[in-house]
Each structure stands twice: as structure tokens, then as C-alpha cells.
Image 1 (cartoon, rainbow, N blue to C red):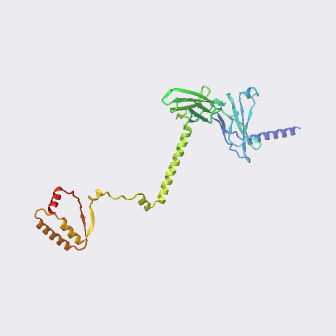
Image 2: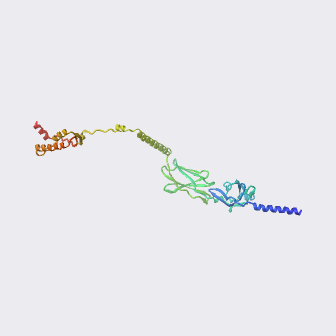
Image 3: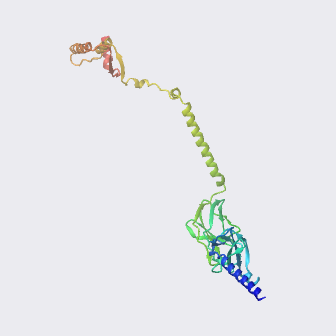
Length: 341
């Protein structure tokens, strides 16, 4: 009997020792990342050799679990036997009490030790970011929309007329509403909007940059699209007309559309006339156009002889420029002509 008891004790001791040697180490660097009321527990993966995937489980314990459930730990439903090294506890940590959280890994049927969060977590320690806000002009008012607001948060919206921020109005928007309509504003006036997320009396985010828009009238909803449509149609018509003109325009069309008008009779007498004259025409022109100043007979014979000798040196036709000037008839010439008659 004594031998059997001794063997049994030895077997128990060996099992305990082996269990202590092969137990997995606890996960390391357990931390809580809480932003905009989104609570995520994170840890480092186990550095142990395992034939299968290492699975992790998370448990939490709050005021309700301590007082009502006699200090028991509750499994996080979304974080039981998972392969990830993070766990979303947003819905589990739903009160403003302090929570203790721990995590452990499992390789097959062999679990690791629990690794607990160093300090209890309270969701009031979350970090609030600047809200995502979009402002647009409505009929005689403003339309403000928010996205991804934290749960149980309230957004304080400040609206003021440009240049009169001291007379600003403040509105509150809950996370469930996420929209704000500001009516009865002056048409044609520019208004600015700024927002800030608030939780309680101590937790608040930074304010957004001011977004300013001009208030439009009831016909502005169709005025801008109609103007853009008409502009596009006119530009398309002009481009089509230019393209068609380039393809179908011909030189004869230019002469047809833009014909040359003749000069009036009143301008033809003062223009230079250039034409070719034969040798005989030049002789006639020389005899009729040379004006005698002192001795008409001597000057005419001298001029005629010199001009004819010049013409004999050059044969063929000559290109001369003749200035034709029409003088009005004078009384003296008329009287002289009457005497000669």
C-alpha cells in the first residue's frame, strides 16, 4: 500500500511539473485604445510554437459584476476564441463605471495565463476628436450634417452672421439626430458655423474650423443648374458653328459674301493712273501737255526736240506714271476761247 501511494504521489508531482513547464506565457503589452467612445483592447501576439492557430479570449468585470454577480468575470461575446490581437469592447463597457479587463491565449487545449489591463478603464477617459461637419445653404436657412458622432455625445453648434460673432446663437445636436436645420435667416447674408463635441461637463473636443455660406432665396435651387445648362448648350452651338465653317467654307463663298465695291466717280479723278503707252501716244502726249512759260514757240520746239531724242534712244513701250488733275474751267479761259472762235 505504501508503495502504491508513493508511486501515485510521484505521478502527481510529475504531472504538475510538466504542466508548469509547458504552460503558455501570458500575452504582453495589453492596452486600451479609446477614441470617440470606441473602445478597443490591444495586445501583442504570443511568441510560442503551436501546431495550430493561437486563439485569444477576453473577459471584463465592472461594478455590476462585482456587486451583483459576486465578483465574477464575464466573457466578451465578440472576443471569445478569436485569432486577432485586438477586441472591440464598445458595447460591453456601456456604463461610466470602472472596468477591469484581461486576456489570455490558447494553443489547442493548453491555455496561457491571464494578462490584465494595468489600470481599470472608464469610458469617460475616451479621447474626442473634432466632429466631421458639412454645411450647405437651404431656402432662407442652413443645413448642417454631422458624421461618425460618438455614442451618447452632444454637438454644440455655433451660428453667427459674418462680422457679428458676438451675437452668435448656439444649438445642441444629439448623436442620434446628427442634423441641424437653421431657418429664418436673412437672404443674401453670409453666415458662419462652428461645432464642438461635448460629453458631460469636463470632456469635450476641439472646435471645427468655421464654415461660411451665403443664404439663398427660393429660386436659387433651379437658377444655378439652369444657368449651367444654358451655358453648355450655347458653347456647344458655337463650337459646332466654327467646326462647320472650317469644313464647308470655300474661297468663292468669300467672294460672294464679301464683294468689292467700285470707287466713286468723285475719287477716280485724283488717283494715279498707270498704263502702258506706245511711242506714237507718247509723242501726242508730249505735244499737248508741255506748258510754255516764257517763249512758247522756242520752248515748245526745244522741249519737243529733247523729248523726241530721248524717246528714240528707248524702243518699245514705256511704263509711265501720269498724274491726272482736273482743273475747273476759269472765266479767263472761257473768255479767251470765245475770242478765238
